[in-house]
Image (cartoon, rainbow, N blue to C red; front, side, top):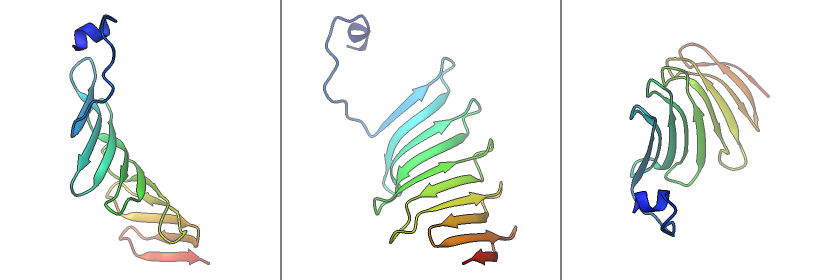
Length: 122
């Protein structure tokens, strides 16, 4: 059916159902994945040429969306989330995954290399 569809001889299916879809490049490396996991809910993951996760958009089990952008090793980076009770946030993590800074509707905070809060406002 895929060959017939590509040739323009068949109509596209109205619905395709699966538990996971993978997008691969010309070498067969996974570059994207759309999945639903029982522990994290639905997720869209994007991979670089080395197959490291560089971006993930997912819904947590309580339905909250979360966008995470990772460094070239698939660690650290930026998290963006709407928060709870009107407190959205942006978190910055180092290459070890330790929270180093957070910007929230309620304020700003900085953390040490060990994750301890060192400064906050207000």
